[in-house]
Image (cartoon, rainbow, N blue to C red; front, side, top):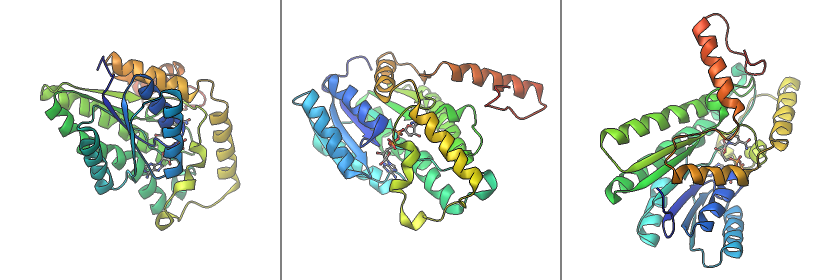
Length: 283
Ligand SMILES: NC(=O)c1ccc[n+]([C@@H]2O[C@H](COP(=O)([O-])OP(=O)(O)OC[C@H]3O[C@@H](n4cnc5c(N)ncnc54)[C@H](O)[C@@H]3O)[C@@H](O)[C@H]2O)c1
């Protein structure tokens, strides 16, 4: 979609980190904003920043738990009723949990897959038919480098982000088959500074049982926190290059070029058929 001015952007996870920066990039282009998050005060802050930097920005917000299809359907109704359309959907809300593969609880799986995988699925289900009918639209799914190469200790997150890559590639082919003028992009960043390492702050209490606090888990969480904090590309930069990719109808978005080299090395490991690819060693 080349000309975004006056169009409607729907952003899940719009109350923090990358979602907030995506909202600001959309506001900079004169788009109208529909924000969805479980964090209502975060969305208020995003709307405040958008209004301050780009006066006249029109916004609507809704408390939405993306893992609940009925919440995401209500979000689609809000976009339709308030602005008459939804042109650009960012399925961006995401959460992470850590631990060795054998320690994850059913609650860990339900929580992360609910937000990261079902959330994307409900977004596609609620908005893509509207876009097909409108004759224009674009969906950006926030996956991760973890959709391609897998850090140890992040098995549930890795599985969820691989699913997002699979869903995005399949969606692109399905839309091509029906000749719809709806674009798709899949965003695959490595670590960058946001609040992702404290995503348990919004974990629902009914899915509260998590893997045991071992020393190995604590160390792994500390490593991830450091990696996120030290990320050299900012959320604002990633958001801007994502918007540029939408304007150019670009499918894969790899802000960190090293990830593409690792994905190729992983394909070579598969070709050798001997050992599991070791992401940290790059072979
Ligand atoms: N920060 C990184 O290093 C990194 C790297 C790769 C991919 N990502 C992905 O980027 C996306 C954005 O995350 P971020 O880094 O900005 O983290 P963040 O924690 O700053 O923002 C995530 C937002 O999602 C919201 N959210 C959580 N559960 C929700 C739910 N059930 N329904 C609706 N909203 C919910 C949170 O309230 C928060 O506002 C995620 O999909 C994440 O997996 C992040």
